[in-house]
Length: 291
Picture (cartoon, rainbow, N blue to C red):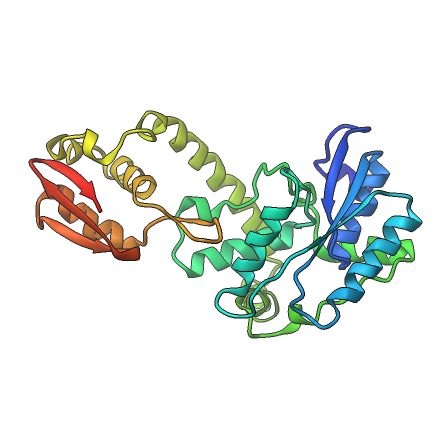
């Protein structure tokens, strides 16, 4: 059995765009896509956040040339302040073609589940990347992918920021997961990935049930009707209606505390509440208003 059998690539001959950083995960993505017989265009994003970023770009260009593949370099500038990871992610989304494939593995799925759990995410955050066509390697383990790349003779680039405890994902990867493995007496990554798949199925079913609510605006429903809705339906509706989008283009649902305060407004316990971003949810004549 080969790694390719566990990948979810498009059919042989399909044209695909790949995000290739030069690290072992993205090189594995590239090699497997070629083994699949896809028509590959290599994309590299240089964020200029590391002194070696120019060397990474040169390395990826040389690999693409050696394999006779089209190569596209995307130069972006990311200010090294604030949420650097979110800013860099937003810039990548801006410059890369839609549906660009990335080298995320099962280990990335597990790490993302834990990261989202730590910030109190709901079903969406606990079921990431499931059935995501841009993540064709999500059923592969990181270690086996790295062995595959090493066996090819390619020497991947090493991003030293992946070792830094300054980033929460690295602490989850290098500290939290080993402790969880020790406590469980087994490798918990497949368990977390399976949990994500199960929760995704529940989430998809709930999304189908709530599909008619998605387009319903806040002021369109009488609060006397809203209080008769099942709590899960009302909460899901409020999460959609009260979500915010950051300047980096990332959408965030309201926190559990914000939902609790909003429910008090719906039920008439209070007439208004404050929400993130300087917003205020109020109730008048049984209708909700967000300003």
